[in-house]
Image 1 (cartoon, rainbow, N blue to C red):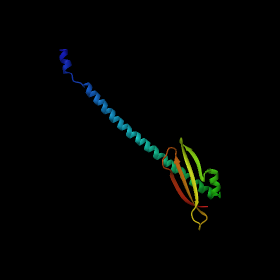
Image 2: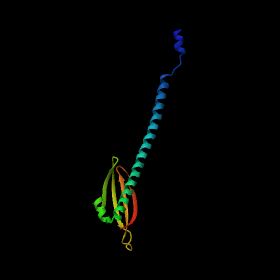
Image 3: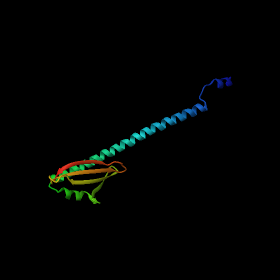
Image 4: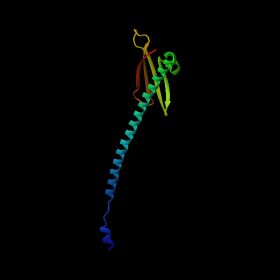
Length: 138
């Protein structure tokens, strides 16, 4: 009677269990890859947005200093250091380092009071910088 019960019991064979484990592993690997890629893209977009906000903050600070009567070139020399003709500074925020460059150029010879300001921000490990430009009367 015991022999009949063992032969009549149904269950999974070793091959079926191994195939099921392989399928679960493949599906888990694909899901993990999708989650990792999404997380990486989210972090990259966050850093690009933070770079843009840093550039905007610098331009707003520059305009406030100008409105307070501080010369733009004097302000630039207190905020940035010159490196081979480019004005640069580093800003640390939320554990990331952002390299900021400021370019201030005359727009036209006919309007000597108008300059173009371009702020370039590159986050640590980033491939493309973020640019923000404006024209300002000095």
